[in-house]
Length: 435
Ligand SMILES: *Cc1c(COP(=O)(O)O)cnc(C)c1O
Figure 1 (tube, rainbow, N blue to C red):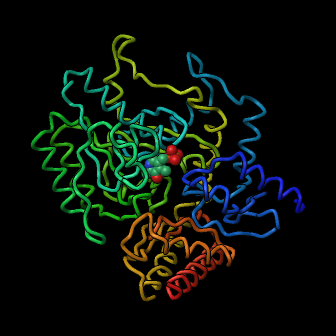
Figure 2 (cartoon, helix red, strand yellow):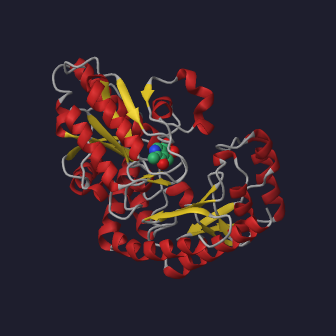
């Protein structure tokens, strides 16, 4: 791309594009990285620079950019069928993928409902739970319980169960009622949170449609890790109240935290599981909400008892073909085993940064590692300074305010990961010493 082509692109961006989570001033003032290609963990810019993508294309790029098998699966599917509705029609990918997902899902999750992205997979999960009770003799079960600092997506149902005021506070008068315990102080565990939820479940279980959680680690709320033991306790409390546990594994699924699902850390099976991001290898917008046979059975009977949900691109053949190939690659390339080795290096690399004065709360889980630079949260500035430093060293990071993290592809090679860690450490060092 020559200089005038580049200038033309940036002009179109400044004048006409509206980027996500970007103020109108920033839209016009901050030039984005112009990306012309991708290769494994690297983005390739218009100037031929290879930039290491430390946030994995916003946490979805589990197999790197341009995996040859995903390219091939997409092209082959495009040559036969790119889309058809699923209104009385079926195509191979939708049926086979459902079968294959059920085979790798936590036990008992045997039904698969497709949608387009993480937010919609959560909407579907909430609607499954809510409608189930409405039409199965417990209409007073209308309330959801959720964790503080939860993030479940940007649509209204997902925002209602979410709890990050910095993102969604402005819309809060439009949300439905959700019980959410107060947030623990930074660095404190989730014991009191799970106690409060369990107490609600035992006291007013008959009003509760479901409990929705990001198992083991909360992503956008600040990469907050909680324990398998507490997840198990919360699961047990939902069994005792006979209500649904909805696991939002949009971020944690597909091996991001170690095992295939974060629920596996606790050995639990939720009633409903939401999956997107890594489901399509981060290649296409594609999502699935998995449910137990019990949930599915609650929708038997007349037409009026059907789950009242369905998107135009439900089960899109391109997405389904790519997701099937993702599962095949996980099997053939032993992705989880490979990631387990890298996860140890990642944990060590971050643990080492705990020695930098000003760094707090270093944590890691599988192929996620994070640290905080203060207690100011999302609107803090320190993370952005780290981002600028990293960018000048050929690494793209996307901090959450004070929280600096990396979410690399699970199949990243050891040398690329070492480079990512080194640049992150240097950038944190420089950003803090300049503060
Ligand atoms: C990213 C994310 C979502 C939303 O997914 P989108 O594809 O951005 O709509 C929902 N839940 C969790 C836990 C996420 O990390």
